[in-house]
Length: 248
Image 1 (cartoon, one colour):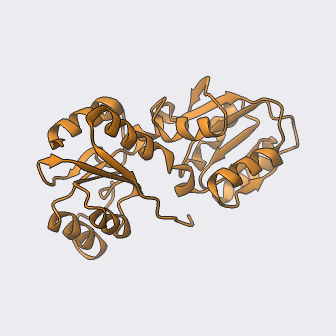
Image 2: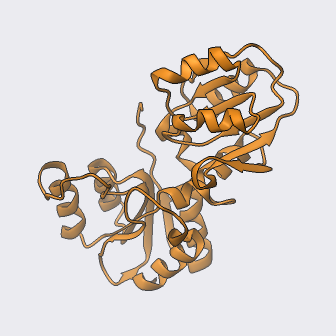
């Protein structure tokens, strides 16, 4: 068991949230009990994950997607009221790290996804250097899509380029389809992210660079899990990662 403030201090030390211009607050979002023995992690602070953390008798919940985002109207009604009420009723702290958890060179979503695919980034690109890039061993677009299908347990959306040899891959997990042009400028032959919007199919056809959308949730399962495991190792906490599948 450790003090909540000590857990917060270590998480902030590892994630360095002050380095990032983000869409919402990073760190402690909801204050719960003062001492933490059991930490649950998951991708998004949904009501289903909060209820799963309650069932697991969590003292704190660690997520990638927290409750508060720029542009919300600030009223505590509906789904926001339900989520906050459950956390407060059960005295559970909520910690959230968004862009810091994408960017971390070892524990982050991009680093963790790359490691599972056998890639180690040798360059960064895009806004706030969130995107990762690596040289590829000889492979094909079908082979990479198959790797992702097996790893993530879902069918990726594949938009072929011009069939060029795949020498360099760029990737950024989640909703980073807007990074496609930056990936092209960085020399990628293939770009991988979680989602695809209408323009990317045209960019792939017109530039020859292939695009794979492998799922927002699916590509971001690994960073928060790695951060929770780090906290467990370093601080002596019990940790459990709970994955609630999401089709997005």
